[in-house]
Image (cartoon, rainbow, N blue to C red; front, side):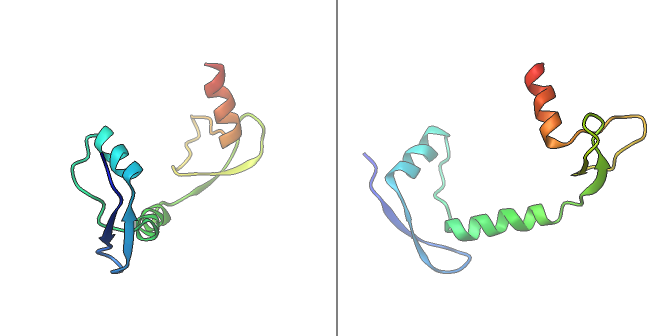
Length: 92
């Protein structure tokens, strides 16, 4: 049903393959437009958005290890490192 297509990245101008499997995935998710950027440019764009996020130092309320969190910790709320947070989430 689907065949590999060669597309041109609008960011860098390189050709990239939009595989039949990717097309099938896009269709299953209801996406109608083909990708306009190659994987490298998509990844670079995602990283650029993430790099703007300010991280704050905190101390885990469970294990006491220092950690970084993407929000400003408040005194009235506990902060957990990613390991302890994942353990708490599994327990619930």
